[in-house]
Image (cartoon, rainbow, N blue to C red):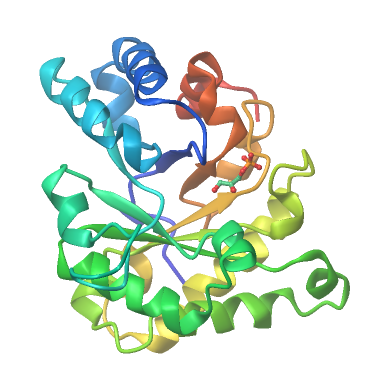
Length: 264
Ligand SMILES: O=C(CO)COP(=O)(O)O
């Protein structure tokens, strides 16, 4: 278990999903970038995850205006290059300055039949290009009702990290996103989030020697808003949030990044 004095920097990541053209993306990034200041970035790492088509514009905005935001993509191909129509490689993301890529989001597992083996291959593709994967895990409602949410989620962690060496695993980000909480307004209780995030860290301690479990940031995702983030962030194994809908509104996402100012 991680000591309470861990050095993990909180991470607030906005998963825009299939929203915002590249023009809308520039506007949102500028609103965020000009509102957030040095003290914000000292306290939390702020990341936006636009659609592929907006990455180049986001890169230009961030570089031109010297914004402190980081950005990344929502998916990556397991393949390095070649005849894979419609896919985007890790090298392409790296060339656009992406720091992160989401891997294994439940929407991709559900609508694109992504299994643990594919998620694992994508984690490898990300690391091969020095892009940090944000690995999404989490159970659906049926699994939760059956009381099997911890075992189910840990099996996804095992699958995603298969044959990933400790030097890489220590920088991975894991997002616990219970499917029943995504886009439903039904946020997990802080206790529910802590139960699974703590179990994930426990599993990392079993899988890896040294400080891996203490270094890895475990995020919670699923209906995070300014009204619930402060309570979630009080939990010892919740190191940040993967925010969907609420990250599309600059004012709301800034409030989430400044959760320390909100009543818990
Ligand atoms: O899936 C999510 C982030 O990846 C969560 O989405 P919502 O915040 O819209 O529930």
